[in-house]
Image (cartoon, one colour):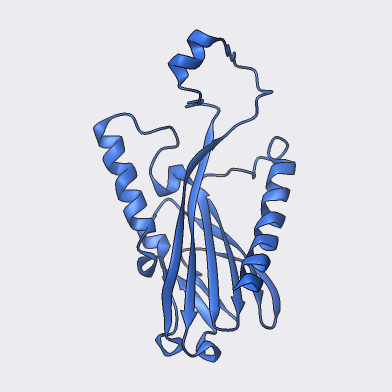
Length: 196
């Protein structure tokens, strides 16, 4: 299990380091409709990390304020807690979910942008020590799923069925560490199967 965690951390770090380095210089750093899928297969373990803009998973990126938005956010969290509706594997592999961790929406923004941040006591009380930038802020959210597979030799790919759950999600950039080596690719609603 430690090997899988380490390998996923390396894959994730590489993706996030590249994301952070180019965040303010590239229009693709936080792109609505574009998520990221990292996966590691190690022995009988399969780990999947899904990251996508909150706009695609929830419908908005700011903190939920109204009762309707809170209900919409709760529905998004409930969907993320049901990975069987998001991914499909060959049933012969016998993969069972053994652990999941949700990553709630975290707003990302660059403090060097041009709108005014007055961080005195009165303003920080009003903001409750967080920023809520409807125009400049971006929030990503996602989940990590760990599966144990009874017959890992039968685990030869996955089908990303999440496109029907999240219709505004148009593509997933995939990075994977597999028993046969590394893989990278892109999944879309019309090409949603990854084989290895």
